[in-house]
Image 1 (tube, helix red, strand yellow):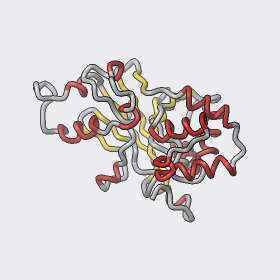
Image 2 (tube, helix red, strand yellow):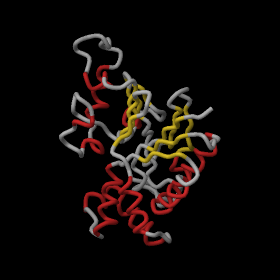
Image 3 (cartoon, helix red, strand yellow):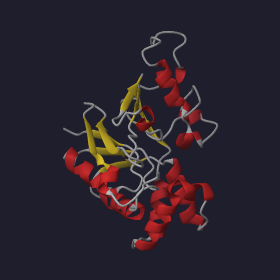
Image 4 (cartoon, helix red, strand yellow):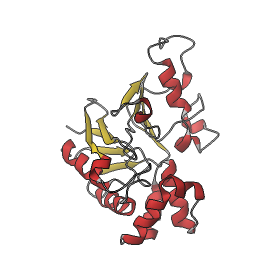
Length: 241
């Protein structure tokens, strides 16, 4: 049976991704939805992008753009590195492109093709961070919210199990979709190392950039898979810490 498998923020951890895919036991008919932040953190950002470009040739993939990807895309396009980006993992990405054999032009095209968000036929939304419009992301005034917004997740956490869905106080943003899948905010912030579900929002970022594992979830069955703690796969590195 075809599965829809959602994968959280990877942050240059190619070893974690390949381990995770092995544990999933991927099948040719599976669809893979990656929630963004492919780069910045561990040492294999360039190699990871090359791997994903090859992977999409064999499997049905949807790539959502994260804030770190937008930074990297700008650097690949202009050669100018945002100073804030360099401090938040960009330096490791620049280094990886110096050591890895990579076609930067082809990688830039890959970043250009990434989606801001994706909606499927089951009324599920897949987005890196969030959106602020109560009418949905297609009405979003601030495009940066797709990669930066944390209010959607904060609202879901605050409302979780406190207000019934049929209440007039229930957030309208959360009523637009059956489910919403996000990354961006590591569950490690709440001392949790597995995907979190609040209201109808699933947060799949389990802190792979730091000291958590890389996670994936079957959007239908809700089966979860995880890599080892990523730090254990890169013992001589610091990640984004």
